[in-house]
Image 1 (cartoon, one colour):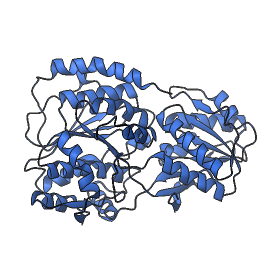
Image 2 (spheres, rainbow, N blue to C red; image 1 turned 120 degrees about the horizontal axis):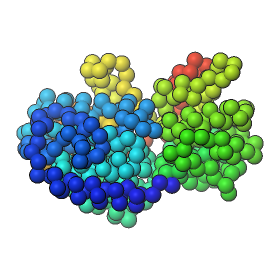
Image 3 (cartoon, rainbow, N blue to C red; image 1 turned 180 degrees about the horizontal axis):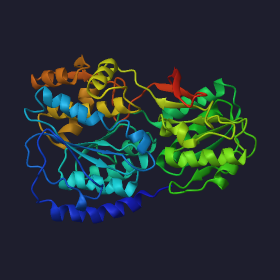
Image 4 (tube, rainbow, N blue to C red; image 1 turned 30 degrees about the vertical axis):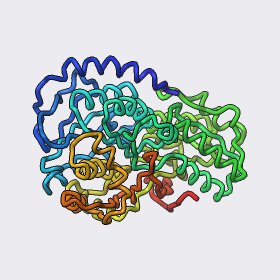
Length: 439
C-alpha cells in the first residue's frame, strides 16, 4: 500500500515553500479559472488572491494512471463556476477557481493541496479522484481549514477516519464509498452464478479497501474467495505484471475481480491474455477503468477481437433530479455527453458555493459548517444552483438535489448512490446494461 506518511513528509517541505512565497501578489482574474501548470507550489503560476469573492480549487488528475477517467470530469467545475458567476456569484462577488493537476500521485497531490491552501488561500477544493491522493490532500486541508469534497474517492477508509473525528468536518464526497459498490458487485457476481472468485487490486487505499469490502460481502452471500490467503495486490508504479497475472488466475476461479487503474490495469489484463490464463474466466471490473478508451488500451487478441469483450463492471451512476438539466447544459456549452463522474464533480462544486452562501462568508470554516444543511436540510428542494443561491441570499433554507443524486451528505461526509452495470461489446464500446442499488 502507498504510505500516506510519505505524502505528508513531502507536504511539510512544500508547506514551508508556501509560507515563504505566500505574500506574493495575485495575477488571476476574479471569476475565471486559472490552471496551475504543475502540482508543485513553488513552480505554479497561480499566486495568492486579493479578490473579495469565494475562491475554490480543483485537484484532479489530468495526467497519470487515472488521466483517462479524470479528464472526463475536468470540465464540470469551471462550468459550475461560470454558471454561478452568470447569476451573480456568491455573497455578491464572482467565484474564483484555481485548477491543479494531481498527476494521480499522492506526493503531487499533497504539493498541490499545500499550494491551494497556503498560497492560493482557497476556501474549498473539489478533489481528489484517487483515494490515495485524497488521503494525502485531506491531511493538509483539515489543519488549514479548507473544505475538501471529492467527486470520486471511494475508499471506506474515509468513513472510518471521519467517524474518529480525524477530519473535523472538512471532508465530504459526492460518490458513495466502496462498501456500497463492493456490495453491489458481489450481489451481481452471485446473481450471475459465480461461486469461486479471485481478486487482484491496485495496492493503495482504493484497491485494498474495495477488496476488503468485496471479500466480506461475497463470503456472506455464500461465495468463496479462491486467493483469500494470498491476495494479489500490485504496485501502482509497476510496469510488468506477468507474476501478478498468473497468481490472480490460479486455482480455476469462475471470475476474477480486478480493481485497477486504467494505465497499469491495461498492462495487467494484456499480460493475463498473453499467458492464456484469462480464457474462459469472467472479468469483473470497477469504476477505476470505466472510460471509453480503456478497451482500446487493453487492445485486441490474435483473433482480432477486443480482449475485454464480455467483461462486466460497476460504476457509481447518476440519477439525480438535476441530471437532465446538467446534461443539457453540458451539451449546449461543450457538445456531446458528460463523462464518468462529471455529475459528481458538478455537485461537489455546487455544494461549496451553496454552503458559502448559506454561511454568508467565503471561508472553509463557513462552508464546512453549512454543507450538510444545504445538502440534506429541511428547506426547499432545489435542483438549480442559481435558484438555491437566491433563496439562501434571501435568508431561506434549501435542500439541494444534485445531478449525481440527492447528495444527502451524512455525518461522515458520505452519500448513498445507485450503480450502473456496464459491459464491453464486440465493437470495443462500453455500454450500460443495468442499474443496481445495493441492499
